[in-house]
Image (cartoon, rainbow, N blue to C red; front, side, top):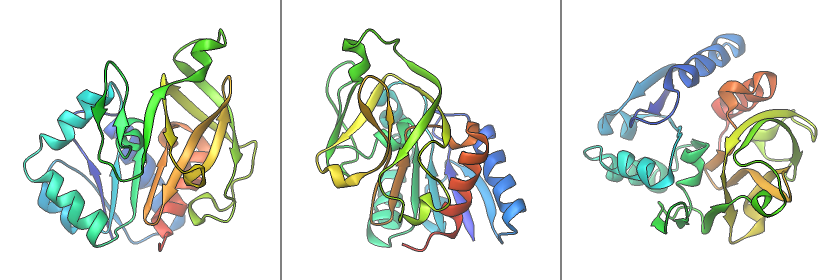
Length: 214
């Protein structure tokens, strides 16, 4: 099994790759982790991971600026149904629109917007940074197997995904109001938190993703 972690100049790729390599080793999964900016490698991968750190528009520009990447993602993820994991801004890019510093189109894979955290109106610090407890809304989802409400995850973000369909929210976190922590549909799943920094919670989610058969 080939797991492609897309390198488009955003995200802690070394940390993400190490977390996936650890999950592969500990779960004894027959998989190779490849950090790549090559569209052909992404198109041929069995699983695709899109990390992301920074502003929504910059990440989208960097991703779609890679030659052939837009077509490779559409083919592998949308047409062939390969399991996809978006991390932080990589998750947000699945939205219809991101509203950070103006309105910017997303990939449109899951209808919804990426908007400023509601905590901005509650006197809480922005960005939301540090450990927080997950509230699992879809315990039956295979990627959340073995995780219960109260599991700790590490967040760093000022904007959050607000899906048009609340059924797309698989887990939330409380920061001034419930905020999407995990979203998904079909072969797509995304985490607002960083699994690679979330210790046992993150390792379990990555291991689940490696074994997921949507």
